Image (cartoon, rainbow, N blue to C red; front, side, top):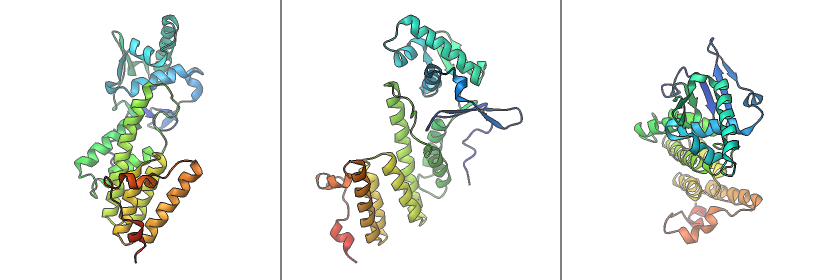
Length: 269
């Protein structure tokens, strides 16, 4: 079952902001045509302006705010040229009526016309909360959001300061989605799938101590102590290969905040 009632049925444009930017336009016959990278005028300014507007609350931002976010060191003349060209290219790609000028502001049409995976994930997780967070009714919603998040990091090809807060918000939604999905899978007895969600969390957000602890605690609750120990060792090996430290190596310092079954208890039959 898919939560298709949350993914609006007939947007004109579909934008993937998780992972590499991907824009598709709906054709008259209902099929989708991907926009080739060369359509962005062989430059990053149009793509960056497009993403900056799409990830702003309300999808509306002033010329000055865009210029300060994207080209803080550029002269006003150069920043104006970049922005004018970027807006022109964006209109050519998604349609002039979908990128409006409102006084000193630019605005991209809402989710019903220009669909983005980031906004879809937020809507799916909110609806999952309305359905009880970890209930069987919430699982299809969380699974759909999980599939979108699998594509990659939000704004992965952007490095400017403005994108950090946007990326942090997306990661917060992703983390909540994964936690509820793992707990939901445990609730219906799908322990392996719950473990894979925890594994994805740890790989996507290295250093997530709570995810590793929750995974081990889940296995211990179901009498799978050896699997819990193997999970811990696998994560230690994973972090060692990356030259980082396994989060639970800090357990002594945080044991009051996040109690875990001790290794001695895990070893007991």
